[in-house]
Image 1 (cartoon, rainbow, N blue to C red):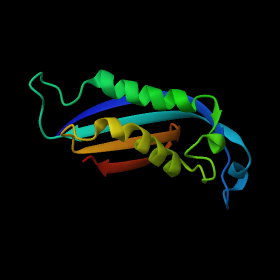
Image 2: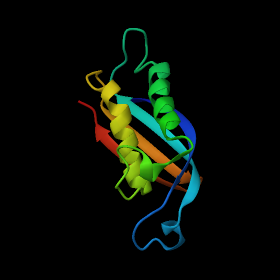
Image 3: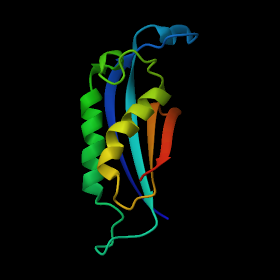
Length: 125
């Protein structure tokens, strides 16, 4: 199995609903967004996927969230913007450009701090 990895960062604010202590107040994070694609075979040019293509998709999502209140972003508004929910949102934004490319899976990790992340991993069609 081969894999290609790309990361980006963005600054954003949010607040959590429920029993999350001080995180129920608006606060911010320096998020790290990571995407990993996996697949069995390489193309004739020796690549699993052009890293530049994955970089463009990841950078685009990060740019769309940069300096935003995640609770106001279309697709996240009205949801509890936990790291898991944000990871799922980013997966949904990145995955369409990867479908039908012979890739096995996409994993998206969203780090809220250097010690804490949530991820979504799913097979690609």
